[in-house]
Length: 240
Image 1 (cartoon, rainbow, N blue to C red):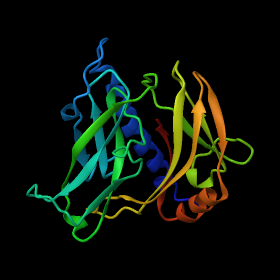
Image 2 (cartoon, helix red, strand yellow; image 1 turned 90 degrees about the vertical axis):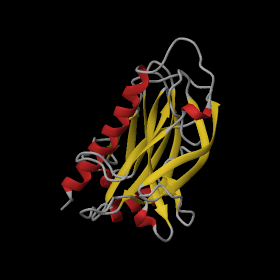
Image 3 (spheres, one colour; image 1 turned 135 degrees about the vertical axis):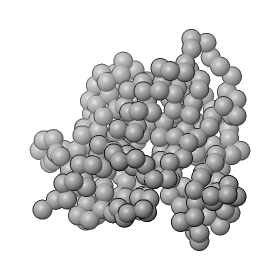
Image 4 (cartoon, rainbow, N blue to C red; image 1 turned 180 degrees about the vertical axis):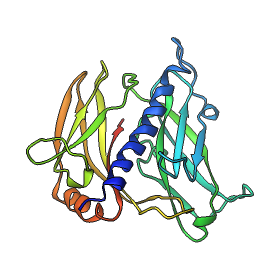
């Protein structure tokens, strides 16, 4: 029997936070291009999220009216705001390495901590930032991802997926990475972070169009094995 609560919650939570971020796109843009000042591109870290959202989120702000990619260093800090140099910070989508597009308003990624003292991290800062304009159209809506069985039928649980359907509701094309995330089972008072991240595919989805992508055997195996006792989710991420 599937852990229905875990699987369904995982999908609602991850998509909900991303939609919220994309919803900001109309709040801070204007018709003229703004200079790309790295100091304007801040982040907000949430270690333990409210009910209904995923822990360990990192929101990347984009106050301009242009799609951008970002690069810089993610720094772990303790409750006294002191840098923790032995803790390495990574993200699921590698936004800080320029591998995900940040649309006007902002986007959300999810961090992982590695190294001694990781449980003491209370803040993440983004430093030595560089900003590059992405030569892509602005899109304001999430490219929806739906898990499918081998016959193309919609599924409730990502762990059963053999294919995914990507639906682009925007009037512009979208470059999309399909990313698999495995989140460890929740523990009270302990933030839930990704224990495995895997790039599955990168595809182009036309305006107001859908595309079906077959999952590779390794991805299917991970979904089926890890989905029994962990959160598994397939995500659509805007790609440069």
